[in-house]
Length: 495
Image 1 (tube, rainbow, N blue to C red):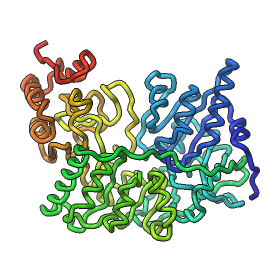
Image 2 (tube, helix red, strand yellow; image 1 turned 60 degrees about the horizontal axis):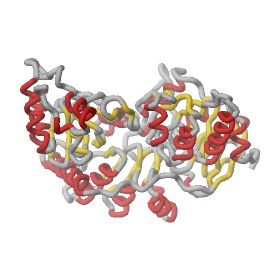
Image 3 (cartoon, helix red, strand yellow; image 1 turned 60 degrees about the vertical axis):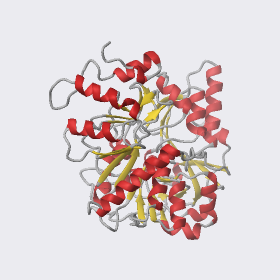
Image 4 (cartoon, rainbow, N blue to C red; image 1 turned 180 degrees about the vertical axis):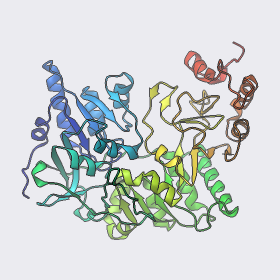
């Protein structure tokens, strides 16, 4: 190998206060690990000397604890974008100890190329192989790696032996031209390859290679329960009915699904439904349920940005690469999440809402309107451009003290214009072609927990006459009541 070998500490010593770093990976798949842990130790040492030390962070999406958790705990983050799911990082953001700007995942790479955001000084990339002429083969996640590798002044490589070299070929690396030179992205089916399997860089930019042998930090997903299983059954039943009604082609359409226990339950129910034929997946996160459906013959092909699999599932894929590799493709996120492709392929988009209101607006990001949870992720990339956009959510949380469906969302991420279907464990609200009052009636009748149906009907009666019957004095009463009492059920419209 032509590159200098470094320890993690040596690599971290090269990074200075105020530097901006771009990372490979998407979720905790394909993210670097050891250099950032060493960087956190360096930050702690500098802070002990009363020296400032913070860095800017660009990632594909969330990361493992070795990036977000380690750096947040030592207060070493100046700014962060576009998505995170770390408890420690969330604390930093909500305390305003680090600046965070939420962003549609498909937009970050082009924002960087356009010069809208500070140029990265460093790219830190996890790879399974690298050649002397600068060909970089990534591991289980791509994210924004091609763009930060191109823009960064210097590159640090983490060569992770946990990921087999035979992964080479699973990636399809393609970077868009910028306007006015941009052309259509020639993806016409999920399995279309349009790029090359590696990132090409100038070898002179690579300052060194840190060798590791560490698994991804993807935690096990929360098991499905009675509520999530019922949501899954409702989604599968709805899609089956749409096929029978002729509103979805009999051959079906590619599916995009969010990540988590609800998404796993939904995909599992779709695979078990005999009316839904084997389908393809065009999404950002390929998770355990997709691999299981492949084994069962219910998923034919999956294109995504990362293999966000539990350790047992990823190791199964690696043991059987000749079987899985022809049916998997990993792309940069500005391709996996591109609105143009979502519209062309006719995706069925299924994402999870944090909160919905009775008129069909969705809050994906903020708890009670103020505290950032994770971020908008790719949900906006897909839902506005999907053939059919579905949002799912359990109807209540905290043993019924919180209703996920409220008079007015406390923060809007997806407006009523992008949301076609809302599904909870109680039922399905089809919002297509309905006026605001019709949407409210549909959601209250079919999706709201019985505890809250009467309260939300009372709210509609309070609403000012007009196209959308909102009451400005009561619109956020559910949230206000919870802040005061810890229980939305105690709302009193007459107070």
